Length: 488
Image (cartoon, rainbow, N blue to C red; front, side):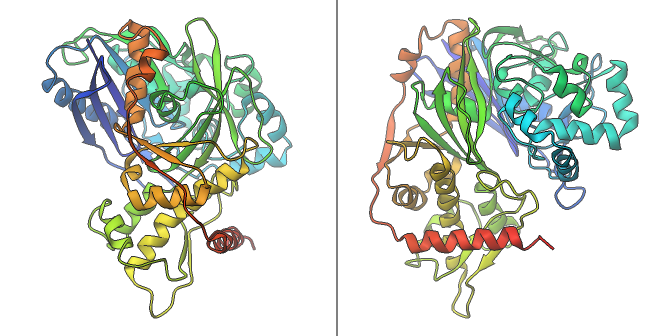
């Protein structure tokens, strides 16, 4: 038996067919367009995401020996999507998680004293990152579209809910607790949409999807809509929680970091809702069909892999992202250059949406290799910031995944900075793997998490060496400058 996993990411959709022994049998990938209408704004056309999903899945299925038993979904979180309840057409582009246009709305709510109550209910903070303020912005700035929401013709959700609607030809309007817990509208303790929060953000609860467990049969694909296939959709989770599941971090205290567009550090806290005093978020990791919820602490760093993409696409300093390691190795250090990649503000643990990117320490001797190396160092420093903010302290091991985890120089520098081993699995696409694992559990492909643990294989373990804390001190000072640069 096998499972089809759909990973609808920020820049493209990956589809994997995963076998019962945890191997990737085949894959497909399709990029979709990014839209930047104004500085700080990021949008996606939902139809582009759907067409990319169809294309990626068709390619993966073409390489599979047999039709998969079920479908699992994972997705970019927090992105606000609207679509017509009947036609499934999107009346406007989605507002992406990276979008910062709602900073003023968040500040307005904060000034009115709402943040403590919001944090108590959701485990989050008032930041443009989350879905709730994006929906408020749409209500206030796109009244023609929002009238469809208030009248019941148009529904709202995150990308997982949109894809399930498309896969089922509109039969299901559902989401899962891991995605719901990123919206500012879901209560961690109640496990449901909070009427108090819906009222605060001006979102009709009737437009929101039903919250269902992360695995079990959640719907079935419609053959007319999805490549002629009728398959159970039996697993769904937001990308970072899916990666935690795919890394088999099932025990309390186990930690993973996904190095993707951003970097996301999640610690399994089990059935306990752990509150952070140092800028980390409390979130739902997954919920079983029994209703039992597993929680996590999360540190969200908005720009890491995206900084390498910026070196490639914005500055033209590198031709491909993997080139960054070879170029960085041509110099022994960054030559005093420090890069704070606050290209869309700063996430955990600083939470400053107004901060902007900063490069310091440039001299006549600075070369592109120094800037590339400073970018890789910045990624490791940002992750260290989050780990040091965690009340749990330094983890015994950090499991790494995502595209940039293939960079040996970065992984070794990360181990050095944390003073803890970093383990990279053979399969680094653990986000899609987590969706496959959840779906396979939900459909009986695997009988237990213990079975799933046996499929995890180590590619390389990076042992920590010596570290120069002066480098980190210089980084912290540069972060303070980046935050101060936009303050009057």
